[in-house]
Amino acid sequence: MSPAIGQVRPRRLRVNAAIRAMVAETSFEARQLILPVFVGEALTEPRPITSMPGVVQHTLDSLRKVAAQAAEAGLAGIMLFGIPERKDATGSGALDPNGILNVAIAAARSEVGDATLVMSDVCLDEFTDHGHCGVLTASGVVDNDATVEIYAQMAVLHAEAGAHLVAPSGMMDGQVGAVRAALDSAHRTDVAIMAYGAKYASAFYGPFREAVSSSLQGNRMTYQQDPANVREALREVALDVVEGADLIMVKPALGYLDVLAAVRAAVDVPVAAYNVSGEYAMVEAAAANGWINREAAITETLTSIRRAGADVILSYWALEVATA
Ligand code: PBG
Image (tube, rainbow, N blue to C red; front, side, top):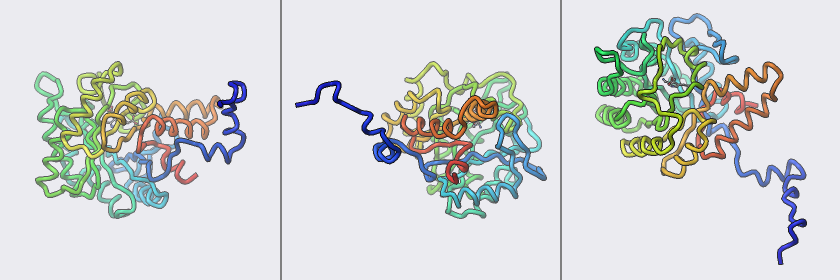
């Protein structure tokens, strides 16, 4: 016979830290965390990013150090973003084998070997002077298919530079299939693709735009998804899986935990979530003002993302929490 309702005491499982730890359903470990890393061209010392306290644009030297620290801490990997000194309309720096991102990938890989994964952003927004994720047509709209061809070439360059995994983030139709085909015909069937499957046109990327010195005018609503939609995310994700995505990412994380849970339920591949710059900045700013308990907020943030279904999390706190 079941005890009377008043005798059912869920609090018994919370009376001390040991029992709470025993029954915790969710946790996060270093092996599940990826640190996004920015590398600036021609920097002589790391350049702080004002809107992301504690995050910098790295030099090649400081990149090597942080890559070694990531390996030492047992992180899953580092996700590299390159910031070229000069930007142009076609983002030509992205296809320069001596361009900052390709050089950074090579430096990181030579530092860590296979001890942690070297991952790279396959996108043009850091390289274009208009700040869009692709090249533009004569009338000024993003040219999907021309952009996808460039992504495919970028991915092969990244693989040649030493990337273990590439992450196309531009939300162009067909980008995952084109990148997979290009890698395969370059005999790089070993290089994995983490697809930004469900990437929303989000205000929470604000600080990132400073991080990559973005010159974007306008917005990305013609390629990134409408925050109002979840069925659309599942459609995008299904396409990415069919096109050959090895992992699927949902981005941002916190406002999209329902999307994350739906994606986790819908696919068999590992699912990642990107705890983006604005999510980082909000906690850091509130903590700096004494309005929030910083460490507790970070732990709660990462735990929530895992609980919603992320196997892997990209977070600017990855190294800190893995070495705490
Ligand atoms: C595009 C890209 C962006 C982010 C990661 N990749 C910016 C955008 O789509 O506007 C945002 C990451 C963050 O905000 O932390 N290359």
